[in-house]
Image 1 (cartoon, helix red, strand yellow):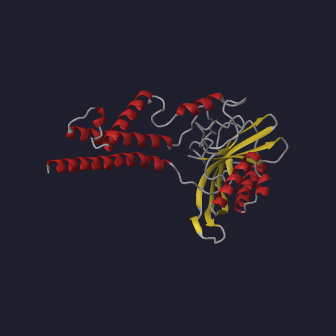
Image 2 (cartoon, one colour):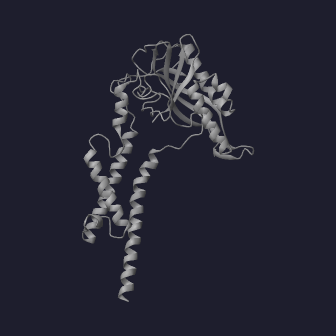
Image 3 (cartoon, helix red, strand yellow):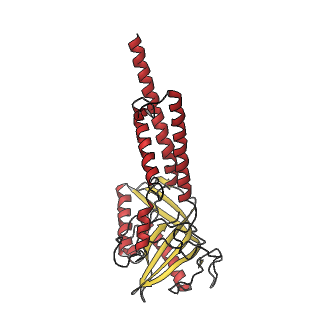
Length: 335
């Protein structure tokens, strides 16, 4: 009987250990899940793709429309360190690291990861979170387990809040002390574009350019909804069309079709404009209202989204050869 009771006790301890490990994993996963936005189906896939010339790996200056930081490129043909690339920006992005690898967290990150790993293994094998470190009394060990869980959750939440606090990623950004958007030519009144930066743009952007940007926004979404790749080739760079085509093929493989309609530009600000050789670039932040829904191909059964308009804020970069027409060169999400 004693042997059976001992086995039952060991099994019970292992069960409790497994549940404790699950609790720790869930407590760490919740902040991470909150930090990850839902994958939107609209053009660009709700991610950040494309190229901005030598500024591809530099964060666009913040604006009134997008006071936060544009997310870095998930997909780009531009290679870090290639001629003309901004070295400090690329180095800064690489040095940023993850939660436990951010500046000042090197030793703490290693220790935290080690303790957490040892604790999880101990819990999974039924000996408590600190059994892998030599064992402690049950009460003291339980207190330390709870304390460590609370500390890890607090650090994770603090890290998530800092990532999502609106701030300019680069101290040299022109919008660091920017005032209210300048208005002119009918722009910046809450509808259409205004100037979100107090620093004069190296490249002059006028009303006709803003009209072109707004037209490209609507026509690109329409061509995407119609799966008209030929039309997309007239609106975007070959790089961006390659991403659009890949996303459309993925939708077809899933037997889905994405429909974007009622696209309205609510507000837009110029982030920066510049010239590189014979190519002009203009990056603008846009707050957009649109209806975004995914249907089952053939039956039109609603798979995701709906008929209710949603608002999104994105940072689009347009490029043109000198004397040519503007094309969509990059789309970035605003954090």
